Amino acid sequence: MEMDREKEHKGAGHRKRLRERFLISGLSGFQDYEVIELLLTLATPRKDCKDAAKELMKRFKTLPAVFEASPRELCEVKGIGPNNILGIRLIRDAADRYLAKKLLKKDAIHNAKELFDYLYYHMKDKRRECFKVLFLDARNRVISDRTLFEGTLSSSAVYPREVVQAALEQNAAALIFAHNHPSGDPSPSPDDVAITRQLVFACRVMGITVHEHLVIGDNQYFSFADRGYIAEMNREFDRQGQGE
Image (tube, rainbow, N blue to C red; front, side, top):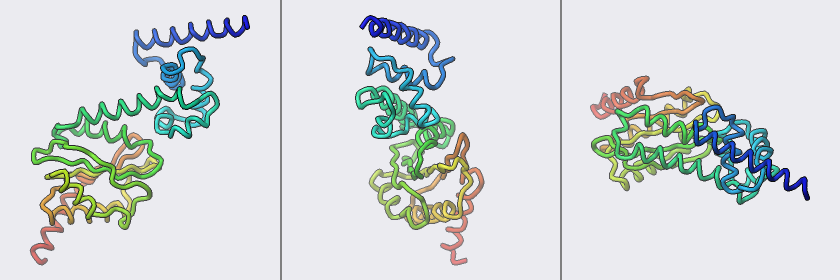
């Protein structure tokens, strides 16, 4: 009993020092497991969370992967239960909302850095491919965004009709597409090119502009607009309309 009280006292001192370090200098100097440990203490203030935090890093390898893990996966780790994952879930969802709100009603075309920050944070560690659409108004300001498709993306798995329907529901004048490559390599596949072409053509028929399609990889991305793909697809659409 005496040893348990001593252990609890030391744990309380450790948690206090961890929080004081954060309040003084933020997360500077924190190891990734310490970030997780700090988050776990939000819902388990009387328990030493260091071992559980290290177990999470051992299981999921990276800090973003811990944030992306499902509640079921988190609770499979020794020392983790439904109650003490609050901090992990909260920080992920709060950061997601913060970045989304920063981008909302801003010119997405001339705020490429904020656009990439939002998309990269939201998509880089997804273990499945996700296809996201950002809906823009006539001034290229972001109205909203939606993940329309998940899983292995192919030209038969992304439906232009659904994209156009969603754009009309949002009264969008323009769109930006983004999807992730879980492999980390953002190089577009032939299917990626085919999907983009289909979408550009379908949107042009409805008078909707496609500005961009970003493929998100590991700390890098591929821009269909920057590489000239979007412009060439628009020229091809125009040539077909002229009967060439």
